[in-house]
Amino acid sequence: MKSSMPSFGKALQKALQLDLFSDIFGTPRAKPDSRPPEQSGETRSTRPSNPEPETHAPEQKSTRPRRRILLKDYVLDYELLRSKRRSIGFLINDQGLRITAPRWVTLADIEQAIHEKQGWIRKKLAERHERIQKRLEPEMRWVDGARIQYLGREISLRSAGNSVRGTYFDADHGELHLQLPALASEEQFKDRVQSWLQQEAKRVFTERLPLFAEKLQVRYQSMSLSAAKTRWGSCTSEGKIRLNWRLIHFSPLIIDYVIAHELAHLREMNHSPRFWATVQSVFPEMEIARQQLRQQSNADMPQF
Ligand SMILES: [Zn+2]
Image 1 (cartoon, rainbow, N blue to C red):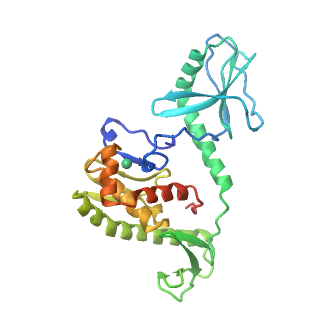
Image 2 (image 1 turned 90 degrees about the horizontal axis):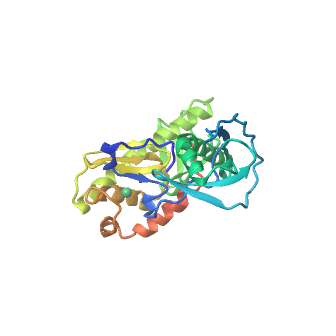
């Protein structure tokens, strides 16, 4: 789970959140981003000392063994270096967290310092992770002829000037025609595409939810779209379903799986074997869909 997500209070704990990187795949929570963020920090030393500024280390692959610590709901891997410095230093680079500590500081002290500094660490790791993702993403150009994924299929975006009213999808040719002024900016182009996708997401989810609710014999109270960065969906015990509009990029199989998954939480508010059996009972292709979602979550998606 990314640290940018709000942490849940007691009341929300029952409201299970479907986490892109863990529960939707039914796998135990993996280790956190192993090649996260940047910047350096200082923390208190167990001895009075003058804080030494940490320098930005060259970003090279380290062969040193990594240590692991369990924080509240998070497994943190880090590299520990011993040095002659007088305080514990924290550095975030592409490989993750590196801690430099004086030789006389015990591991218990270091772990204590990590606990105290965890807010900063998680924030910086998340920021670094996002920057790495951005670097990997080719810049999307929002122009006539650009291509995006819609329901698991690649479609072309066409700037139609005034020859169409509003937005028209030509399913036969896989073309989305957008009514745009002649000198529309890429921003306007992008906004038009995004609102069409969100409208489609709402339409498709609203069509599919009742089908699975009936199969599962559950009632949901409401459905709303979310734009969460790391979650595909969530469901509260009161039956409030939230689904990420970006699911509209994926195949109907994946969309149905996420819908079945969330609704199944109204029968089992957990990820127990009984929960997975419940999903499977109404959605036999569960395993294939989960695998596809895992692969495609990593694929390039246009960033809105
Ligand atoms: Zn779940």
